[in-house]
Image (cartoon, rainbow, N blue to C red):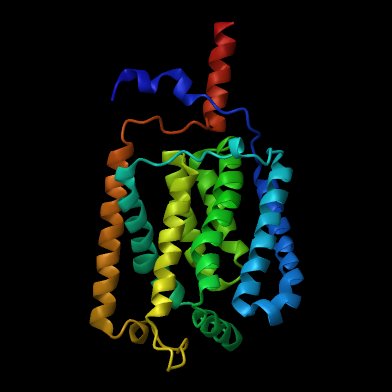
Amino acid sequence: MSTTELTVPALEEKPLPPLTIAQSIYTVMAGIGAQLIGAIALPLKPLLGEETTSLVGYGLSLGLAVFIACRIRGLPTERASFDLRIPRASTWLPLALGSIGLMVGVASPIAALMPLSEGFRKWLAEAGSETGFATLLAFVVAAPVLEELLFRGVILDGLLRKYSARTAILVSSVLFGFMHLNPVQLVTGTIFGAFAGWVYFRSRSLLACILIHMATNGTGYLARLSVDETKPIDVSASLVESYGGLVPLVGIIAGSVLVAVLSIWALRRQWRGRPVSRWPSSERRRSTSSRARLQT
């Protein structure tokens, strides 16, 4: 890599507003409230069906959540506000495999160990039986686009302009898990959010985050299709039973973790030598200000 790629202009910030931790919490709470807007679509259920109605309601509520988040941050709701650069093609495969490996080998096994109420288990079984085209659009298209716009495009991007990368990624990933409002996705969402946050921090690409979100949700959707529709989904099955035995469980987890590790290693090699961030941390700002005062 030439030295010109590491010059000062590469580290300059876009003139976009930062976001405080308090504001990010307000943003998520407002986003949770915005989900109530989805109830507007309920009268359409007899006409559109349950899955299509859910898609319409989800799109309305998350779209409103993104708009509210932009207003709280003071971010213009236009394309230029989001970094939509296309990630280099050589990163697409490790991005997708890394996210899938983390979810299958780490997040899902941990979430499966959590105690769940009968009501929530029933909800999981009903949700797992929805495999129509509208569910595909909601799960694999709408959710990745809208949730990444909200959490990486608005919240994480704003936090990175004020705090260190570690703090910004931790806060945004926990908030991402929390907004799903259930214990399973609190775990899986936080783990995925941490990986997506690292990807955004290093790649500066919101499209890269959308790609891995699509890959992860697409894998979950394919898993739904593999379920025998003639048999009810047994959400009370143990972790070993759900994987078909101890040997398959160990093999799937070990293989998935290996894929995730190798994918992250490949991504680190791809991004080696690039400027770590275009969002100076608060510590870096203070050191820059100190040097400027000394020079004066």
